Image (cartoon, rainbow, N blue to C red; front, side, top):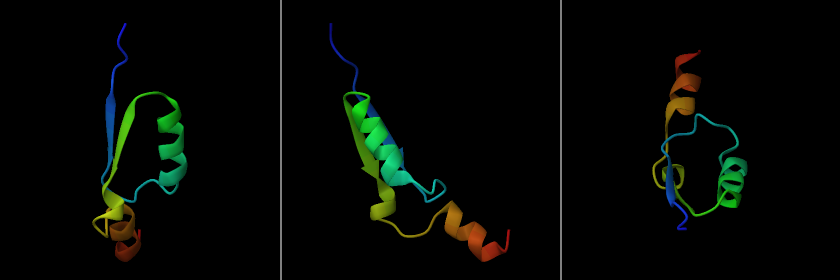
Length: 53
């Protein structure tokens, strides 16, 4: 029986605990994490902070 491989992509800063979530996902099995928050600055959380919401 083969194990499925999952790819998870974080594209913004909406979730405050990305690092904690990444560690949990890695424990689930064969998971490839692509964390775009390390590559591109900005995102939903930053936009909300600037809009006053």
